[in-house]
Length: 159
Image 1 (cartoon, one colour):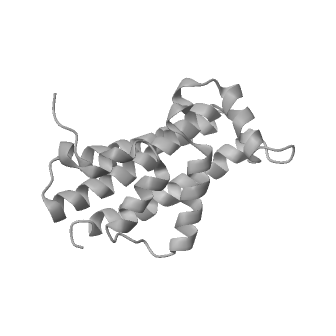
Image 2 (spheres, helix red, strand yellow):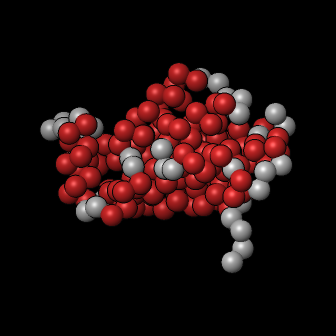
């Protein structure tokens, strides 16, 4: 089996974001938001791995960033620690916080009703904000993060 690298994570992240949009447009909200969250995780890993490879010459299995699990906040801290800042730090940090509150790795196992109930508890879904609205808002935030990370990806080996 070939080894997974930063380009695979980047490509996988962009593919998952595209599929996420299609699923949300087709009212498959829970699966769509799960993939959007995975896209953000994948892009953060791609950035971290690329920067670590360039700076430290580390092999994938030696990388400390793997110890973050699926915690988007920890992954984003690694991105910041590596000095990869997209500008607009407060806006990006706020979006990462929102995404991390609404998404977690176990969402892939739960039914749609669970996701909607969880988002109701968080206040993302209300009588005025439907699941469709909340899913679109979540997708937009993930998409913005991916776009910002794409710019950083080119800078990761130059910093």
